[in-house]
Length: 68
Image (cartoon, rainbow, N blue to C red; front, side):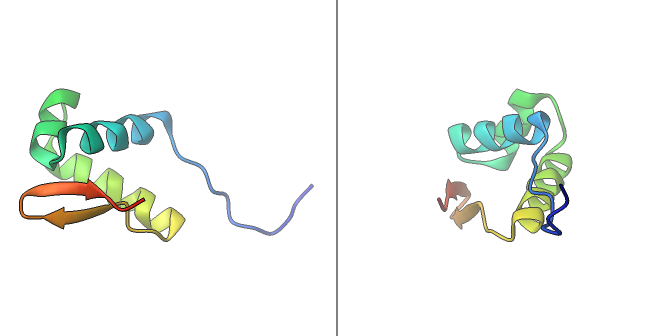
């Protein structure tokens, strides 16, 4: 059944990234733990934010704090 609503889905990879950023409080440490580059991590998180029209993280100095 088609509702016309946009698909609100997240890939397991993106969810893993989100959890790691929240746990480590910054992009660089999270990227190191995940074994990916910081720009790739940042881009993936921005894609999720755009898809859901929300800001997931707030910058507090060099830290990233969840907004929700």
